[in-house]
Image 1 (cartoon, rainbow, N blue to C red):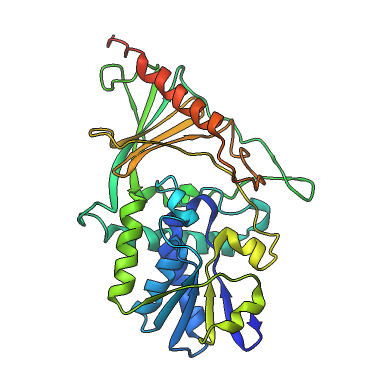
Image 2: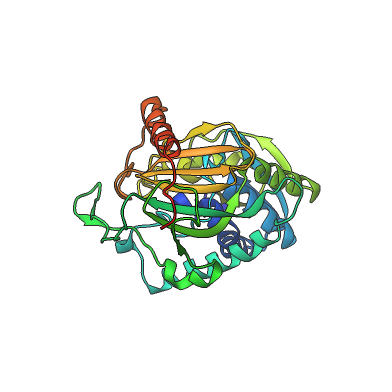
Amino acid sequence: ETIGSKQVLHHYGHGGSGWSLSWGSALEAVPMALATGAKEIAVIGAGAIGLTTAITAQRMGAKVTIYAKERFPDVRSARATGTWSPASRVAMAGATDAAFTEKWERMTRRSFAVHQGFLGIAGNPVEWTDRYGLSDAPSVRGPSSPIQMPGGGTDSFFNQEERVRDLTPRPETLLPGQHPFPVADVRKSTSLTFNVTDLGRQLESDFLQAGGHFVPLELHGAADFAKLKEKTIINCTGYGARALMKDESITPVRGQIAWLLPQPGVDYGVQYNHVSMLGRRDGIVVQPLGNDEAYGFNVADETPDYAAAQEGVATLAQLFAQKAPSPA
């Protein structure tokens, strides 16, 4: 949209899929900004979307400056779980159509391809790791519960993961003796892990090496875009745009993460009894998931919930305190 004398493209990000869709989304957004004829681009925000957007614009020939109040590790993207999840609470199903689905698939495949270029780099910013879905009894997945919408009525989250199942190995059921877990039902899968600390550092370094600049700046409203010298702006403020742009279409989804120290050998993920654990090189992420995807929906409170964090860790402690069953 045109704001004052500026052309502003809003590129907010994607809920629980921010890192997963970042490159593909940037490849959709940046050409729209460059279509203005601009050679110099301002990017607002230095999280996952801001950094990948800025680097993509550089690769397309633009001179880019990132304006941001915060940088890693203070941005919200630094608190991400760090798993490949391109369909995690991206949008409400009722607000999407066939064109959105096609764009989402295009973004997913593009982003997946770009992330492969980070495999094997020192520090392992991106790597493949195993995941284990654990249940005390054979699990049967039922339909998701309807989600109560802020304005009334119900909806469900958009999810078209079946369209991109070919990107990752199919899950397999493990038999007793094939795993160390003390549960009856174990499903193993393999997925990408984003070691967010190193990935953020890698992206900042790539941006700076390509001639980019960071400028500390806090914006309080759309009128503040006039402070920037660039005529074309890509607004990548994510959830912050809810206040900055008074955009109530951005719905908060609260999550509570507990961090444990990194531990050699814990390079896998577990999901058990509504708790997720992911062992990364920069720490072990423990996250209560609630009973369904409505957990945390439309909750704007960002105050740390120490009790929830403790409960998640206690659930995992109980799991690992048990002994695995002997093979039949």
